[in-house]
Length: 204
Image (cartoon, rainbow, N blue to C red; front, side):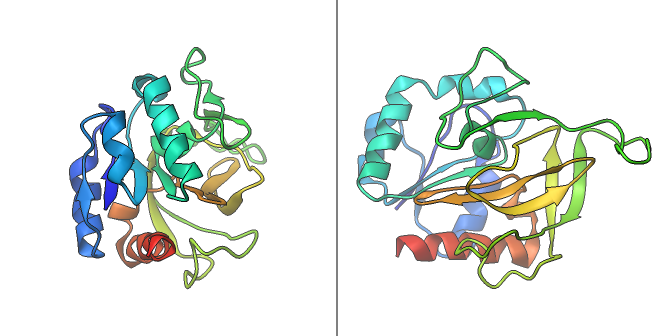
């Protein structure tokens, strides 16, 4: 049973739908105490990092308990950024901190050419894999996934997938039971479905 955490950042309906398509049973916990029955936890989200302020100490404690019990955690989009220590988008809001580094705004121009870049980064882009991972097993390098973001996480110890948009950033992270995706798997066709299936297989 997968807990899809609702902290007011939206996007739950489409994520719930794609999880159903890959055979997952999903529920939305009513509060931190309701995580006890989860076999895995997903923190999705779109929009501003400020929205993660709702994931206060009770939520953090409950999610840490699940991790200590061997139950995996997946962050999607803003949910991935929340796995890091914070973001310059909301300097007063602390991230979960299980990944080192601070998320930052994507550049407005290509550093090498000065060519202008539209931010937010919207649309399809390719993946590169600095090292093999369970999360991206069976996904070829150069596969396209769908993005909609203005801020991104830096490269970190657990970075297993990257994309570039003026700067190379973490597209996917996998560090023990903690995983995250900057792109939207629910909008990324067969690649998104494959990645979610891989994550679910790690639970089953």
